[in-house]
Length: 368
Image (tube, rainbow, N blue to C red; front, side, top):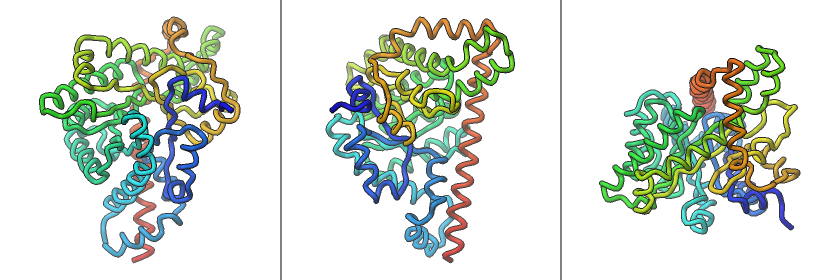
């Protein structure tokens, strides 16, 4: 019998899990989700690894070995996280082959402390790619201004990239341009463009959280009527922008040379407001050629009671434009919202990264 996740997959949405841990790998949980819940990829971030390492038991043996080597916490985190991602890549290898490289992908993030340093980001991306040595890995680079420069060089070197922390349409357009510039460098270097994969991670629920806060502060009937609409509208307009940009001559030339479209990926799809339907950012963002990376709670809710009704993006593009016009008319500055969210996104990941380093350092100290 069809399930909501199988129907979502049939509608053209690639379901990725926004979570990874050693326990999930070794217990068979990840493999089971592939078999039963149509999961075809994984994303990670510093917060996910900080949560995984805080458990500790699954990592005890490796932490003891690393402590005996007397290495730094940074190096230990590098080895632990790349080991997990490499193992997950191996689990997804059949999916990768079955989809000719479109899915079966596992993402790992460059340290968020490097988010505003292009050269350091490039070096770290190359180091992660070499350490993983898996064609189905994706290196996550934030869409900061420095990140844009890094994306060009990393894509140009033939490395597949997940561009993360995208909030605004303006920045998303720049991300696509950086991707295309990287492909041009790769083409000129003789690299097979079909071997390079990229997704652009557009964050959804955080937009609603910030916009709704501002609408509540305005407290007019017109403002309150717009609550819970900005996140979906922003993502739908990103989908429209993607198709517009990849229909232009520059992109078409690269696609004709074997390049792939940089697919939009919906991130931050767990609802932050408990009064909202728990599958809102899944069922409301269905269209062919997109990725939705979900926390396990959202994945399970979708599997249990998600209602997939076909394309919920293209028919609603006019509504999305109207939503943005209405937000502007009541005084919500979307540019200010997205700038704030980018800054906060980087800062939150740095906090998680430092927690991860502290957890590993303390664990190694106990074993020395």
